Amino acid sequence: MLDVRGLETTAASEAAVRNFDATMAQYLRFGLDTGDCLKRTLTEDPEMALAHCVKGYFFMLFCVPALTGKARASLEAGRRSVAERGATDRERLHLEALDAWNRGEFEQAVGHLEAILAGHPRDILALKIAHYLYFYLGDNANHRDSIGRALHAWDDTVDGYGYVLGMQAFSLEESGAYAEAERAGRAAVERNPADLWAVHAVAHVMEMQDRRREGIAWIRESEPQLGDCNNFGYHVWWHLALFHLELDEVEPVLRLYDERMRADLSDEYLDICNATSMLWRLEERGVDVGDRWNELAERCEARTSDHQMVFPDVHYMFALAAGGRDAAVERMLDSMRAFAEGSATEQRVMREAGVPIGRAIAHWYRGEYAEVVDVLAPVRYRLPLIGGSHAQRDLFHQVLIAAALASGRHETARALLSERAARKPRNPWTWKRYARALVEFDDDEGAVQARDTAARLLAA
Image (cartoon, rainbow, N blue to C red):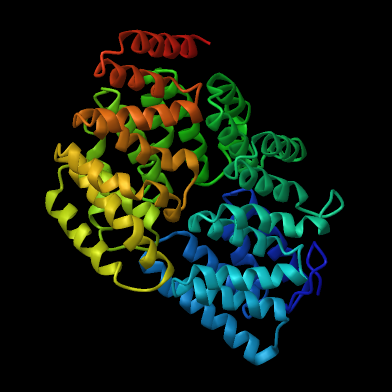
């Protein structure tokens, strides 16, 4: 049978395929009904191989070790279906991609997905999962070009075209093509205001260009959509809080943190990453965050050996170290080192970047700022390996600069801030700290100019 985009799909009934289409629609919009739609699909057809594969993908997306076994069970259910009633080559490749991902071989997984897309560029599931994996591989070129390679098959006559534009927007932003990214993102939102991935892509453009007040207005326009989505909505609230923080508006940040980002005290990995990165930024600015680290540290104590992806691991380290869980910090560092001895994708990333970042975070919370610089500076150009966006990884660049200032590494601080000011000339945080560095070189005139620049940007 054919799905909504004309792709041959092995299923027992038309109803199963239509429910599968609904599952994809809900997944793309971060809908709360995604899981229910998938359940209805498998109720209509308990043997549907692609539905079992998607179930496995969803388990992997949670980034929780306990669910990798369930993902493996979904994979085996899909393979049993293929053995009993056959499948298309596309469906078989999806199962191979799930198998590779489940084994921690991200590059192999995207290889299978690209093989699907070469023959079936309208496979929006393959596009979306590849989009996710390239993002956490830090592979900006393929993150962008994977969408570009499929665009020839998409236009407004194809269901889901707006979501493809939203993916294109985000990948263009991460590649530094800000004008093109904003055009694609706005075009996606015009077609579908519920496309929060596109909303978020445009917010990223505004973040990278330090268009703080525009960013606040943009997200507020989409606020009605945020009440009808899953946890990804908390990440959009994080962007809003970040815009306020960059305007030195602390009260809205704390309110958003308590009432939006951490309203349900979620232990989902992205929610913890949002929270830990925001708390560090607040504290670095001298804000008393109270006991907010404690609940994060409690959740992260159980995750010292997760290692599904390095990106969340290093954020868990922030919570443990800031929460004073010294024994857990040491356990996690030991576990990270042991994990780094392997050869799978994230094991290599842990070895090259994750362990040094983890050590740097531990040093920071011990007040060993010179050691932070010693450990973090040599790997700063390898930070993209851990995945995440430029905006998210900027946390680690800020840690390095703050440590250089705190440790008296004034030449390093001045060099890093000069570099940053050239790259982000409209960023008040940069100019304030640049002023501090210049004072150490008796460059009073330069320091005054830097402070004046920060003040002018904040007032704009």
